[in-house]
Amino acid sequence: SMVNAIKIAFNGLDKKKTPVKALYLIWKDPYMSVGDNTFINDMMQHAGFENVCASLSRYPELTVDAMVALQPEVVLLSSEPYEFTSEDEHLLISAFAKANLTTKILRVDGEVFSWYGSRLLKAPEAFKVLSADVLT
Image 1 (cartoon, rainbow, N blue to C red):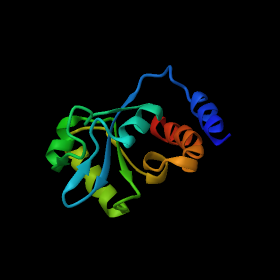
Image 2: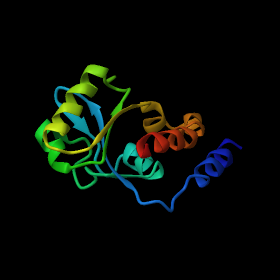
Image 3: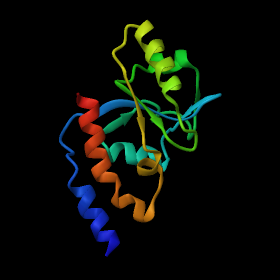
Image 4: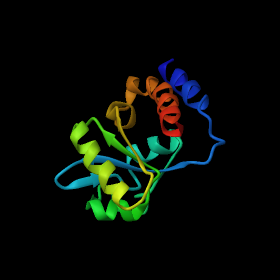
C-alpha cells in the first residue's frame, strides 16, 4: 500500500545525526515561519532539522533582526505559499553575514515539507538531497 511505502521510505532516513538548527520561512512582508504543532515542523524533524521557532505560536511573524537573533545554522526558504526569489536569498545572506554568522540560506521545495498524501513518497529522497546540501 501507499502508506507502507511511505513508512518504509521515512524509516530509511538517518536519525542518528545531530539535528541542524533551522529556520523555515513560508512568507515575506511580513516574514513568517512555522512553530510547533504544524505539519511543517513535524516534517522538519523527519528531515533532520531542529526548528528554532518550535517554542513559538503556529505561524510566528519575524523581523530580520529576530531571525538573526535565533542564530539558525540554515534558513530554508519555501517555494510555497510564497515563492522566495534569489533576491530574497541574497538579502538574507547579507543580513546574516553582517552579524558574522555563517548561516546557510537555501531555497527548498515547499511540497515536500507541507503536502501530505501521495506527495509524502517524494519527501524522504528530497530530504536526503537537502541534507547533503546543508552539510557541504
